[in-house]
Image 1 (cartoon, rainbow, N blue to C red):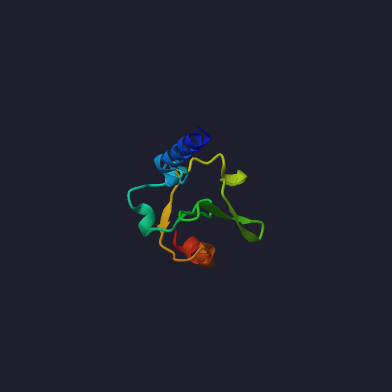
Image 2: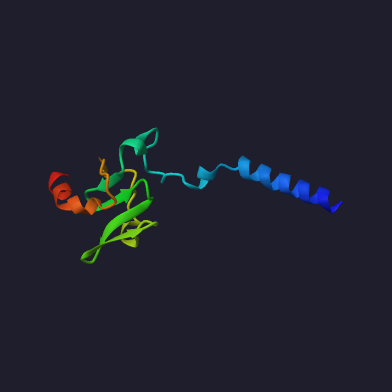
Length: 109
């Protein structure tokens, strides 16, 4: 009897693991474009606010005093900004440090 219960429990757990997709929790932010966008671009630069969003790591990269910081949540200073309407620049940088090119980005955009 216990063997049958164990088998049924194991089968139920296995069915749940394959039924729930692993990527369901990794949805892009509501303001990010979709359809292959992340395959070509690695960062979004917000020129008016001078911060970045790393599409692959899912973090915001912003100036915190004199240093660049990362945060999984939108930094407090930008929370009142509607990111879907402010200017955005799509960047293809094969580097997790887009701020290395920040002076170029600020001059260009």
